[in-house]
Amino acid sequence: MRRIPAHGDDAGLVPLVNDHDLIIAQVPARTEGFPSTRSAPTGTSVGTMHSRTLGRTGRSVSVIGLGTWQLGGDWGPVSEEDAFAVLDASAEAGVTLFDTADVYGDGRSEQLIGRWRAANPDVPVTVATKMGRRLDQVPANYVRDNFRQWADRSRTNLGQDTLDLVQLHCPPTPVYDDDAVYDALDELVADGAIAAYGVSVEETAQALTAIARPNVATVQIILNAFRLKPLDAVLPAAREAGVGILARVPLASGLLSGKYTADTTFAPEDHRSYNRHGEAFDQGETFSGVDFEDGVQAAQAFAAAVPEGMSVPQAALAWIVQQDGVTAAIPGARNVEQARSNAAAGSASVGPDLDGAVHEVYDRFFRASVHDQW
Image 1: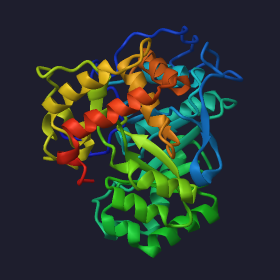
Image 2: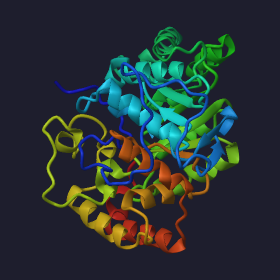
Image 3: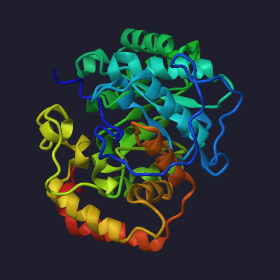
């Protein structure tokens, strides 16, 4: 059965994605599948992660977050024990932003995060969830009553009276122009159901429309070394308005893991098999919309420019968060090693040579085919 097309966060859908070796510390012992309660996360990388203000929320969050689509189990089973281990490892490495959605595992991702937070009440983590894909994505469904119902369900799943941040989950374009939508979201803020709201978008034009709204706190958009269009107008507009930018699909569905070849295959139920040309949902969600074979060649060219001592995905993440206007990148992780390695990018630095290489690779492989899209 095909899953709800909830947009991706490079969730480590198969072992190849972001699956490289970087062991920093042992995961704390736990009891009966629950993370151990502790006053603060421990681990050798605490204190090294850079932080930024999350747009108009005023919250400080780590520049590397954790995307948790994979914890819902939509793209392969993830046990509770493994899910808690990933959340533990991320927090221990300094990650203070978890991104989820009400449709990830039909709420399972939210529920696991809620249980983890309940067991770790002193660990400061901001949870950004999303709503709007529990019904057909038509403008008529983006109304006050549905917003209230969806928010209340997420509040129950996450065990929060007030949700930290709720993002509209890639709604149709007319929704971004609808005053009633923002009035309804403002009511949820006034009622204390949510602390702040933002949007997740497919297109830069949608992002610019949302940024112009006075109470939109954040915009989540696909941004990576193979998707540079947001650098043109979205990041400058967000900087000027004080809106946070969350970069999703930061590893281009695994192309920027540096491990794929032209012969790499994926399971039939994996969107990287069935949605390469937008057959099921927006093509830009799969490999950032680029041709797979071109993407493999481009990834090899990118890898050749990676500074010594860094892995390819770490360099890809570090490059993103060094773009002026980006608040955080939100890669996913299926295991502890991926979580720790991703987090290490939050204290890394890449210089102008890599930035130049990113633009050269993009111009050579992708600009003509993708830049005018999305």
